[in-house]
Image (cartoon, rainbow, N blue to C red; front, top):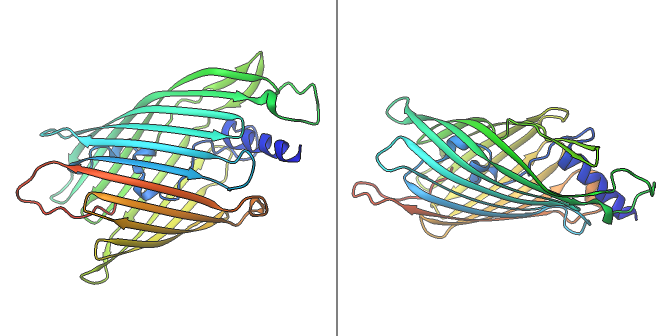
Length: 306
């Protein structure tokens, strides 16, 4: 019963926002390689059809802990300043399941010879269901013990993404609408608007070693500011090693392999600093990406680090 009650609390706080902490969108340690999921302006930001899949299992061993899968694909529109993308998210937290599908569009303005500013739009649907009747609670007449299925919530988002050959900076709000969840006249709360600020830069330490610091700030109404700080070293355009820290929450190790200029494999492990460390065995995140480059006679393909 204790595990199920904890499961219920996590579901309410994290997904529906009926509590002190109202962060509802899934979090990612490898956010620097999964940018389209938070910023629509990233769509079409380089000359390839880019495909990324990511699997995250959080607090392993804790009943009802979050499990998330994402799939993104994006591409520039040939001979146009625009880009298109598709984002899919499947997220399970305890008895609550959400699936999201969004289409992304961006339009680029050339700022100078080496940098562009892309304006992004995101539009799509979220599908929500919860089997709350399966949970145990202290009060057998608890009004929240009802099931809801087939909840469909449309949403839209915006993003700005400025980038050049060495770095990037992005500001976005992936979901501007804040619909409420009501079942049988019981109010479960509402979705909260999330704001993201991301950035990163590449420093050449030598001919073969590149250092990339990056950050992500996430602001949500009713929740403390979430801050991720990361640093990665890339060796010979083949191997990436890094550390990341989510302030007040976790430390993470990152490992990336560039098997070819097009194919990359990433792994991250989070060590939780909160009391949840006593219940779970850490968090694992696996990423696989591939770029289908457009043909070009005057360009040498090399791995992209953002």
